[in-house]
Length: 407
Image: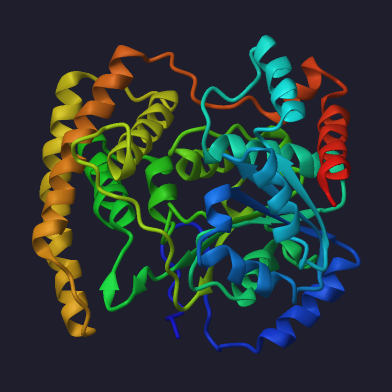
């Protein structure tokens, strides 16, 4: 059970009473008659062979308030796409699998590339973008939830609590961010959020002064959570990064487009664990090292659009301030862990902070060297303006793939 405290400027919807799941699902079934719902699952083919996704499909097969499930499949050849269609067959809902590496969707991607409208790099952001485009093309849902496919502690209560705030017709929320305690197997996880994002936000506040945007980001209890939900009209205008800055980029876009009272965060799980990325201190293009650079750049870019002027000296001050704050956080987390009988390795925590501090400078220098970098994928409104029949083409490509390869 969590507390009822409201921190920051974003409404927090707690899990105060362990409400029976069946009761919430019954409400969602009623909501679905006036506000149809869908789920987006961005997936790698390798996740079909892991332990998490089979369990997720098992739980989703028991959900009866969704109109559609949209699965984005990355890194799959033809035989693997065929296997994926069989893998998702237990789902009772209407579902579509976007074969992102198939010839039809690659041809569509090439058409967008020729217009300068395609995602610049592969990854979760690109996968999510095409899934959202398909959700627009399908037109079967007014509220959509999105969550990762590597959640090893998944149960269908996570989805119910995630989509409820944007599915309830009596609520006015356009967007809901999920949050949870990253504690599993006797350890505190979530290093990038704990040791990079929060101390970096505090360092930016200290070095740059008050910022409404920084107050906004600092109000989210788990800003890097891959689980969120939204009303369908959010899709039209949002521009999302195609790199690891996806979650921060989405929050930034919502901050630009909507008043704070249209956004919320919800406690969606008592126990959450998923695949853990390697620290990769020796490779800035892999693991948490690349993630920390992309996330830092996403924050710097957003602040620059708000009129903040950066220089090499500014980034050195930010790094020094961050380093001190992050080290203090390690002591805080260590004490919290010990009081709860959990393990926390101070040495590995400090190694992560040292790498993040170095990568903050790297991200800052990258930003100064290439201030006009455009990591954002264009909004679907812009794409539709340039290619009016693009949603019909996307819908047709997905349908033809499913018809041709589904045995």
